[in-house]
Image (cartoon, rainbow, N blue to C red; front, side, top):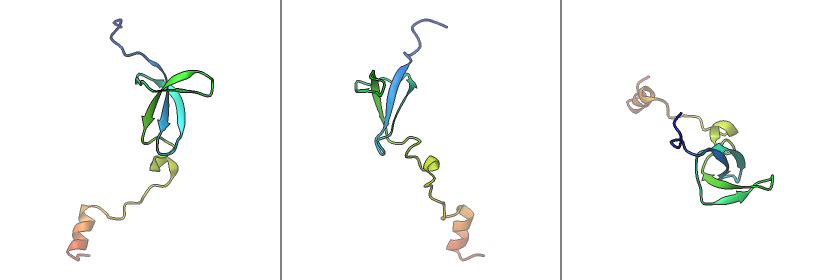
Length: 81
């Protein structure tokens, strides 16, 4: 591999702004904002709108698609059974 062409990989804290859930992981993302983690160390903080804590697929609060597909909507529009 060539030197100095890859982004710096570091530990960062991701914060789900909709639920307040935080998790520590490795990333190449950078941030000026920092937060102190449970281990006493300070890490960059990345704010995200959706994580596994708030995403409907993972929480089981997924909405069912009741509108149907194109064919179903066409049949309903023209009253075809």
